[in-house]
Length: 267
Length: 310
Image (cartoon, rainbow over all chains, first blue to last red; front, side):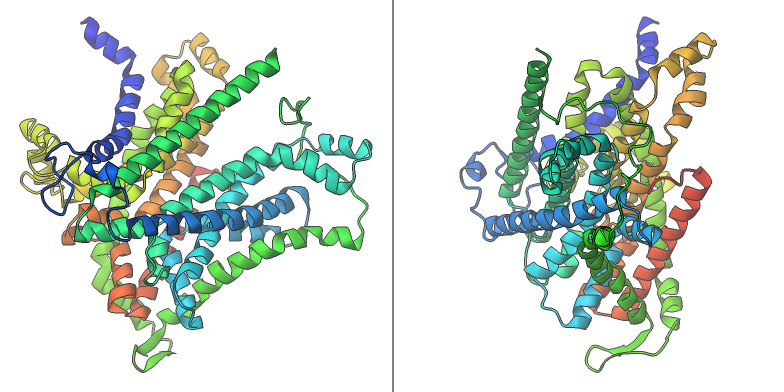
């Protein structure tokens, strides 16, 4: 049977594409259902095509407020975690110092811990300190769990850097500050950018730790969680779809620019 | 010439620190670099664990306050009452991890060796779902697995549901609100965390090794078993860890796609902490979960022999 033979030969490709379909399917459903006009409060069954939600994405109380709050928290958390994480990464790669093993495990442990454990223990601390739960406690928590991921991303890049480039800069009479700003930082930039992107994504999408430590503050994931109990407005799907399309566009444009630059450099 | 492009080949060990004349000021540099970040982790990660440990052995009530009484009975009671949720969590997370490996490996392999010029596109498609909030995507599974929906109909016609119901994974002709839905959601949510490390370690494999294996009369299956798979072990280990650890503490999938019979230990910790306000029990449960996961991770890393993960 030629068909069977073809299937056997391309088994890996077929299995891989099936997995890909499994991963993409929910996104397609989210997209399609952003054009739905559901009958009841829940947007789970298809009724009829409508552009209502797209015309009025902020038409649900608190939705856009929670979105902007999530963006703010993600922005500051990214800034904080990237700054602190980059410093740690440089120290770990470039210097010898005592207590290295302990510091390495302190950075690894948050990544090897179920989120709910960190969430619960941090809440214990805040309750004991009598801290008021809200924006600041969420921000503190987000910087904490993003930090390790930034360190890992930046460390990988700094490790693969050639120290001779910096030596060369110093030989050419660049001062330490100049060397750092004009040689070290540009080379480390892709690693720092990757770490920052990861931190932003993790913070923006975090639910478990935020849910424990937010008090009555509502971030976007918490809004979605709440709406799963009360009724899911179509606008959630609109925002999900918009973010998806925007991000994919950004990646594609970035790829395009990168490949342009590469071909320019070659010529 | 821009320095960001085409750096020269790195020397034998780029980690070798440049020798500097040690002055006191310079010797303190690493400590200043480490201080803020490490302080953050100590205060907001390590210290909370200590607080939690102390909370777990306290007794008292919300009105009168809690006091440390070294009441270890809390642990025994918590385990006795909630062991089904613990077992369920480990079972679901374990199943999801194995499914992620089985589903993710072919895709990672496809990206690394077969995709050719489509490689970047497929990689973007793997990462792209991340850009929509995972809660929204998890809710989409409610639509996909809905009663009387296409998926349930197909599974019903193929009599798959008869088998899974007999195994206790689904109930009669429902998928939603059953263990299968929860495992399906967990698998879906953590697949990228499996695929990316797998891809990274597969991509590093020298293609000439495959040719060499072929030249030595290895069948494709043997090549995979003896060359490709062993070389991808670091990816397998970190992928399974990145899947199992978050899955074991997850309660989002169990709450959104499951029923009261599929509650995982994360749900219990959450409701004890935020609704019942029984802090000692919640702290004890969370500590037990942490201990189980750390123990499992340590044993697993030791046995798989890749300790250079960190």
